Amino acid sequence: MCLGVPGKIKEIYKKDNLRMARVDFGGVEREACLEYVPEAAVGEYIVVHVGFAISLLSEEEAHATLDLLREIMDLEQELGPEPDLP
Amino acid sequence: MKYVSEYRDARLVKAVLDDIRHEVTRPWVIMEICGGQTHSIVRHGIDQLLPPKIELVHGPGCPVCVTPLEQIDRALAIASDPEVIFTSYGDMLRVPGSGRDLFSVRASGGDVRVIYSPLDAIKLAQENPHRQVVFFAIGFETTAPPNAMSVVQAKSLGLENFSVLVSHVRVPPAMHAILGSPHNRVQGFLAAGHVCAVMGYWEYPPIAEQYQASIAVTGFEPLDIARGILQVIRLLEAGEYVVANAYKRAVTLEGNRPAQDLIQRVFESCDRKWRGVGLIPQSGWRLRSEFAEFDAEKRFDVEAITPEESPLCIAGEILQGLKKPVDCSAFGEQCTPENPLGATMVSSEGACAAYYQYGRTEAV
Image (cartoon, rainbow over all chains, first blue to last red; front, side, top):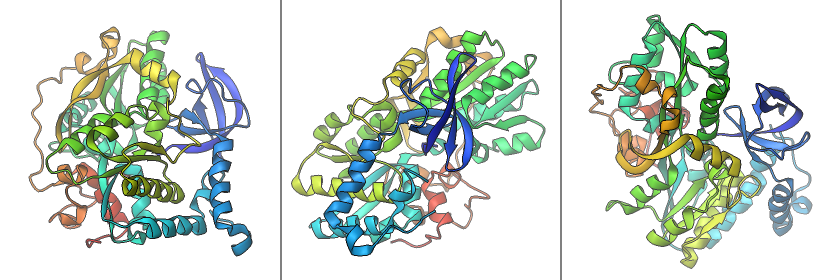
């Protein structure tokens, strides 16, 4: 139940006075409420949980984590490019 | 899928697991609070890839599992009312009450509907003005903001046919209960990423300090779990009883302020029984009196209910990290996902369901 899913905001609109969005989850689009992430804009990624965005994903932090890991292990050079994973 | 596939990169996970193997020198017991993390760990076999010195025990963070039996029985009573459209997150439908579950209420003619978002229940109330729509508002801090919003929305739309059966629980009081128990074995915690996305993790440093436990906030993908375990191991090995954030892309120290504000507006703290575990002081949220008109317990006559639990089920000990699903004599025999004795076998976040689904029939 606490499994939020990351999705990309495609469109923002008002419905019943709530700030809503059309969100793309890797090809599947659903509606989500943006009331709890008032700063979120089209093109940004959010964590959606039971139809509500609970967190705006930080692209910077996401990159920092992965870059640090890759840098330390020098994986790109050692193992070649990433395979496509589902 | 962005923010998912890169955190399932087996080479990165393996590299982090190698670090764990190199850095661990003593035996440690770590609990993942969240049932979503339990499933990820068992599904990806992370517990089996860890060095034998590290034992993962599974925590009580399964909202469906800990929702008290009497609330399930109240839900069953309300859902049986022919005037009612009873709405719930899907996981709750198969959870056994004292005698039956919501599925069997539906089978005998009750109007029980699975919804994805609490706003779906609001929509149903708007579309069915002559029927009572009741929403089973359960969950941890993650579902509290959406559930709270449904109540605020009902009030602002003037919906007189909408009410909520509230059974909210919070993580920090459960951590106090686990760490303060004389039977406690847990030395480190993986704190639940999405609970912390909402609430932040400012409540956790005093817990780490008081009980000398190390805590890492982390997410749900295998790389997040592995990095969380590595950070907890590093803190434990160094004797540092603090909180690390291994889920910075989604979690900040202060959390989501608008969400916390709305929770505070709609709910207030209360003592709450956890199924199988017992009463944990100040571990729940209930509706504030300003929203009493939306309280299903007041609207329907369901106060006097005496629940009855299966004597075989050891879910309570599993939820406290004292036992594993395979320690139960009923596991996989009298108790299966098709015919569950306890809620831990039902939910997509229950430890027993995870063990059953991924074929873990023997102790690791």
